[in-house]
Picture (spheres, rainbow, N blue to C red):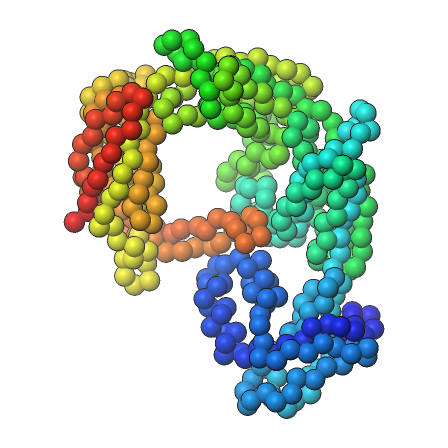
Length: 426
């Protein structure tokens, strides 16, 4: 039946052995796991028997062997519900299903009224976001993001529980639209989304030595937090600045002529970064630019040719005993060759990179010269899991004991080349 007591015909009901359910939960959820993964586990559980409800909402699951069961009920448009601890042969108490809520609407350009045919809609659960105040990521509390392609600019985001949400609609080249909505059980709220144009950064990436354009450079611009905003956050007890929200950053790839465009940006000061596996950005005043509302800023980025190293490290431990895990990272220390201005001052230059579970790594943007390679190993235990998107997020780690350092050898890095390296931890 629904939350008002009306029967639901055609609902799917299944019985799951509680011993089997406990094993599945342990295998999927784990400590600090995702609530979305747990919901999907319940929603997709396969029971020993399956029945559909009749016009009165009734059902029967016959011939179950002795034992304790969880009885799950599922129906399209409703959130699944269950009764636990049901013994074979017992009558199951009524299982009320709550109807999902939804947000729908149209997306148009504010100045012309024309529909936007491609965009993404995010739904942020404000209660879940409020429970994770220490996290600085704007995606905390996300119920997912849906990408829409519709000539009329229409969208429907359903499957939402009752509560308060921040709905964010985003399309390339426009400022993101933010709107707060409050949803009652089964309610469908309509939104009329109108996109405004944002500011933009245009530029060219060139080789600092030859002056020739560089194709395939990944360029990004990130809005810097004004000092007054930062000070206000510190007074509220925030321990880290917030992750840049939509419209506070943009990415593009340079073309054959080295040109790129970053658009749909909020006004403010931006730091512009550029990445390429064989080039490193030359930092000067052109890497910072001020954007006015609807304005365009021009930047010229210069990059210097570098090299890269890739390879494998064997003998890395995965576990440290007593339920602890091991994490590893590589450190490259410059011994001879070209150094950055910062390294010349400190007489040292270090560069770090991670390793995948198989011990493979690739280190990019290394200035030519001789490097010493070492691996840093640290025992840790899994901490709190902060869900940022359904089924995904950040797992915090708690370091245990001292970090260990193992020297692996030396390598020569040459400009424009990839050098192979193999190391081993005894």
